[in-house]
Length: 138
Image (cartoon, one colour):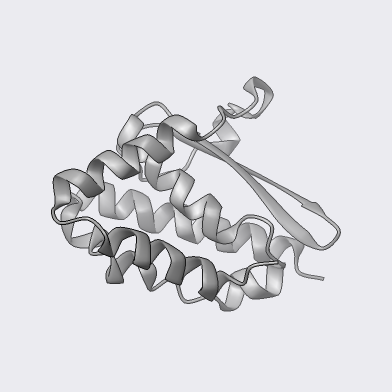
């Protein structure tokens, strides 16, 4: 199993291969395209992230003390960001998610590239994922 820190480092290394933000955006968009759509039964009002410019759905389940996140968005760039967060936090224990410092977002420079509303949406997604982890932490 990959730790949260190890996955974050992999993402930082991948982003360091790109020379400019256009390439990084394309990479994020490609990740969004590869992310399987969330099951229609989870596209519910209660799974919408508050504070996002676009519509973002997030659902979590726990199996074998690991949280599995499912996410989707109606905006392709946002869906790519969702894919990044799922890659880091899905299949991790509640305790590891709660204690994680998601510094890869700063290290790849993503936060600076986002509009204020997108940055708020990103913070809301991270917060909701940590809330799920708190709820599942026994």
